Length: 492
Image 1 (cartoon, helix red, strand yellow):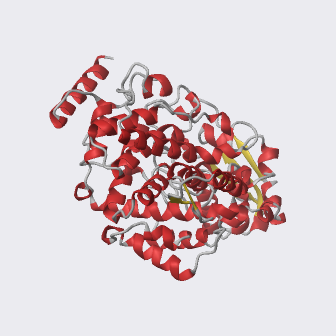
Image 2: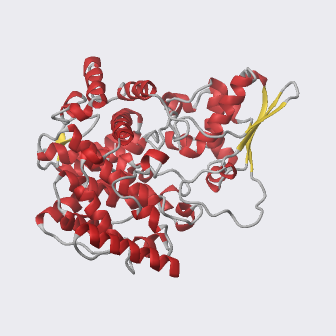
Image 3: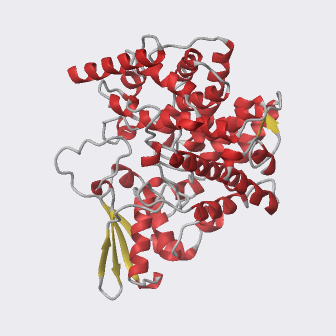
């Protein structure tokens, strides 16, 4: 506890020297978000942020036909009427900015194809940025990049400061939604030009709305799984706009007695250096971010990678496989593998995406996992279901206390081993050293653009190919674009 107090005291003192007043972690983060400038962003972060924008717009638009709840959410918001401020992706039409974000943020997670790193950080910030930008008028590409960078930096720092192993399961929160209110408020506040004081109020108003219980993922799949960033994005825009008007919010929301860590994460000892160290000069998103190359829950990625590696290295055909056993991994891998009978026969798209056995069966049967594998037709594919009957899960015995790792930190112990027994008697095993798309195995711009084209091909409102080409070009050169909203016009 002494070390914690010392770190926090040093944090507050440094804040005072930078902002000309007293304050602690919350105030420093608020002033950081309000004062961040494009010229301070490292080139790697600029390029990554542009990729996040491309990826997020693509997966949100694709959900407009592939996710059954998408039409319901869009129809509900359209029925409310109101001032047409911001575009509803995939469907077209406009709604008040907070409601447009409610739809677009929800669309961003419906396919479970959005990015990773600090718990789906882009769907908490990118839809917010575009909705606020549309409402306020022409916004330059540089300002859009900076606003998103401000929000993603806050979310990444908060997420990676947590020392509790598997804390989202242990404490029962979805980090996307929990932190999204704060990250989104920073993004919206930056575009609205809030100063440090009003930004602090925006973060406080966002904090006052925190939610995101994991109960939404317990038992049968629910649509609430996909709507995390819809709720947080709507609340974030509301928070920033109220702060702009002069509404004040609670202070010390990070470090306070009833603040984020003590009240929600339930710890007195986050990593304060991860929260406030090298603000404005180091952006941990660059070191931790990842993109999905397969459209399913992140817990399916290591088993996909291992299955694909064994398939390719040993030239396996589906008919060669006697059985596939997923061994060990984290609590998440076990959660997504049991009860095995249900996981082998998912009834809905989201059930399939949250099934390690079914997704491993798709990879073994087809050599890839695509959006079409989770459609109604894909879920009934006889070749996949035959393979799924051969997939099982075996936990490893727990030995001693689990190692303490930061949230999202990878280790060999958290990655399962895939064991394939062939009909000719071979036993082949693989524990992947990572997965395609993670920070150590980055994907190419070409792959992301191909993914974008595939996703937007499912738009409820068809998009001309020339518009898709132009949108990709504009995002690729976003720092030179004077009106970033033209991207949204091209895609609707």
